[in-house]
Image (tube, rainbow, N blue to C red; front, side, top):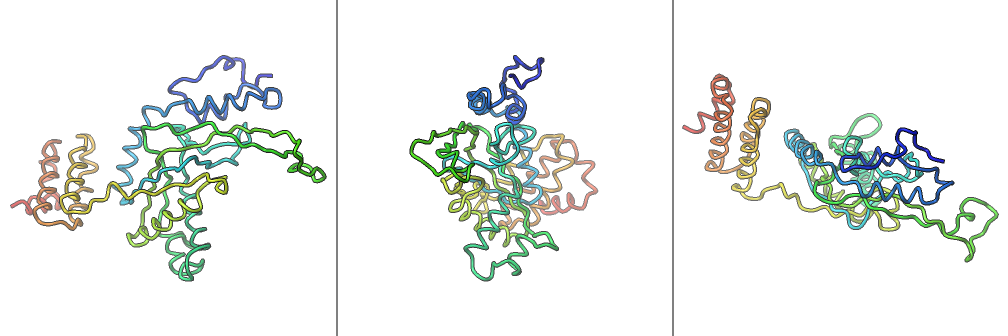
Length: 323
């Protein structure tokens, strides 16, 4: 019997289809009546491409994190990842997908829980629950931690969802107390979607504690893994060095100038002062400090906002630094 409404019976997936919506709402038949229905649904979801709009949204999200002061690192899945496997689903197996764009992601709560678990199991007494270090990073029952763990979103440009399978070899043994496992038991393959790709991990908070949290996550993601089936090798990620962190004064200045020049005219009014704040705090030589100031002033003029900015203290300070 079809599980779709009559008006959707012949609906086909499109390049713009939301993978999460298709997974939840478009199974064709009840699984017990059609053993291929589950497999076909997982295959359909895996074939849905990442929406074109996601790349633009991701860049906006990256800028928001940067303006907020978050530090970002890229983590690459080594194999497959199964986050959200036990969530409610028509398949009884699932995957965590972004509600708007249908791409897999790692909830910030999962990253925070993994890091906290790693500290409890493997770090010294100074990181035990109840210590100052543990409370500052992770919080306790009375206070939130000082480090914010954002959801890890995938980098655009690669395939993210793949069809996978869990094979139950002794179904009766797991479901019936009086049925021992036997060689003649029929294996029961259970299809499910798993994820791969690269993900942007973002943390915000006091710099020393953010660095400590990243150090913990680096080991936890590689050695423990995140999500389900970690004992089978799923969920292992390698945290890459931050590609957005510059080492020399020139690199730091070039990075900031590039961000200033990339501002659209409509964004200047709301965002240009934030670049002034970064310029004021950035520890670079006077030569590169001047380059950044020139870039900010040039962007203000380009947007036609110099007249409105001349009476602003921050703009006066920039002009004074250029004399």
